[in-house]
Figure (cartoon, rainbow, N blue to C red):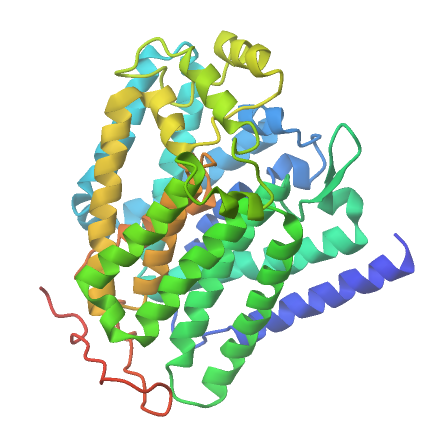
Length: 470
């Protein structure tokens, strides 16, 4: 290691330490078990542990097949520890599961679909990882101070991932850049490719924006200034990486989601159901029309993509020819294995391991039954998000952003998958019980304080009392 990279790595470590210090919330205790979902989501967002410890090459095929023993052992250990934690919190976990029956039903069907998979052993291992996603969500939401727990998990990953990505890209290109067969370079940061880096910026950038807006509403003082500085730095790094990473989907989704977050925070009229529905449907409708109906295709070209979505429509047509049972699909995460994968690769003359569309991916693996169950899950989740926005709970704006991001992101990428951070974050903000307080002792309010007139002009913001059941 040369002197300049060593200095850069030292400065990066100091930046990470300072961000943690500025963002710290000392007065509200959370469980040490939060480090389990933190590590789980970090691995899903970045690279397998075997790659971090240099025990494998980190190729996309190996990552998808999860064939490295270290990764299997690590995932099994995290899942086992997580289940032990949930067993000790059985009452709160049971309440959460009862309040989220569509989620339970969806993952149960995923498990049943292993029975007709051509590769049941692979399908079963992937289903266990999918169950691991829900286990991690339940660890966070069953914490006695679940609101602070949610913020801390997202902040920890973002504070590490974003500065480290810049360090890798600028001073350790062998770690932070990916190269195509033709020698072209792209930024990957701590992820495995530019789309992975864009996804990290999308997820944790939105979390930083939500935290910034939340803290902005608080009274001025040291307790307000420090986290504002931390989140401002995080947002600056997010925008910088998004502009340079050339991940069109994440770039567009970030700004599409940031706008409604800001509107709902500062304008009470934006929280009215009619306006909220029109805003969400308008954003998603514009994206859908530009991508699939060639209406406003100039936006797609403006993001550096052609009207065929960089060959994605060829992938979709070829994949549909390999569907054998449209009703039940090929079994959980079983389509892109074996003869079907080889057939699609021959048809399009390129390597791939997903449909680059989350809805088509669900159809290929789980059939129309899976699509219907996913639709129910999305509709119920949207209802939770709308209810939270109307009450303007602390997770309302972030929930709205993650909902829009999941629906839009899956137009061109498959994110309804095991260990995908965007998929996990959707459950983190939609599996919250509508009447759940931020803590059993109400040490943290579950509604935001109203804005002062000096902060924003407009009608007085009226909020529901914390903890009241509706």
